[in-house]
Length: 314
Image 1 (cartoon, rainbow, N blue to C red):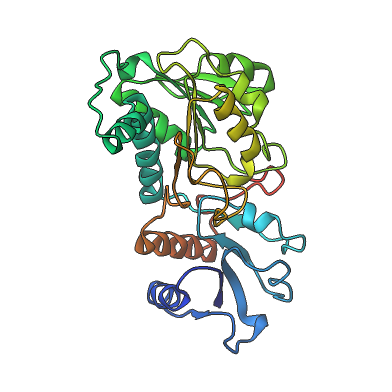
Image 2 (image 1 turned 120 degrees about the vertical axis):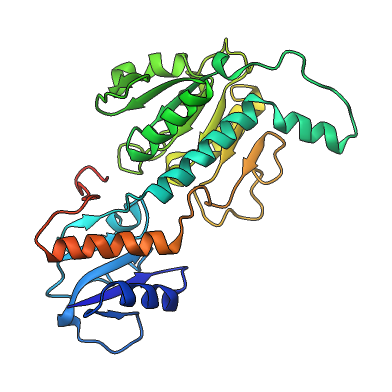
C-alpha cells in the first residue's frame, strides 16, 4: 500500500514526513521519485496537473487537502474512484474567524476609520449600527456556512442562510432554491459567499445578485464577502457595482485569477479588502492527521467523513 502526493504550491517534503509518520507501514511518494505505479492505492492532491493521475491501476481513493474539490473535478480524466474532502474543526474555525472578522469590519465602519486615520481626521460615526440591526445572509450552508452562521448569531447579527436544498439550522432563517433567492437577497445587508464552485454556481456573484440586495439596511449600501471560490464572482461586475453604489464595500479572499494580477484595480480600490486566499489556511498537523484518519478508515472498509458527490461537485 502506497500514497502519492500530487500537491502543488506546498512543501512536499514536510507532507511526506508527516504522513509517513502517521501511516506506518505505508510508503509515501512525491512526484519525481521512482515508484511502482501499481503500488499506489491513495492520492493526496491539491492543484495536480490534469491527467497526471492516470495509469494508477490500483487506485482506491483520492483525498483533497482542502474543503474544496473543484481543483480535482476539473480534471477531464480524473480516475473514477471515491473523492474525499477535508472536514476539520481547525479549518472550520478559521473560516468562521474570517467571516466574523469581516462582518464586524464592515458593521463597525473600519474602512472609513482607517481612511480617516491616514488623513489625520477625527470623525467618529455617531450613528454606527449595532450588530443586531445588521442582516447577514450566508450563501452555502455546509459545515463552514453553518458554523459561521451560528457564531454570527452569538455576536448578535440577524442571520439567514441560502442553499440549493432546504436545511434546518436552529436560530437561522433558511431560504432554499432559485425561487427563494430573491427574498433572501432582499433582506440581506452583508452577503457572505461560502458556496462550492460547481457548474451551477460559476459566475453566480454578478450584477443581478448585487442589485437584489437590501437597499434599506443600516449600512446604507450592501456589502459582499466572498471566501468561497474565485470562480463564483464576476470581478468586472463587482467593480461596476462599487462604482455605481449598488455595493458599498467588499472583502474578497478568492479571485478569478490567482495570484491576483498586479494590475487588478481591486488592489487599490478604497472600498475593497483583498486577502490572499488565506481565510482558512489550516494547521498542517491538523490536516495531515485528518487525511491519515480518512485513509485508515478506507483501509478498514469504512466510509470516512468528507465523501464528495462528484455529480453535484461537493
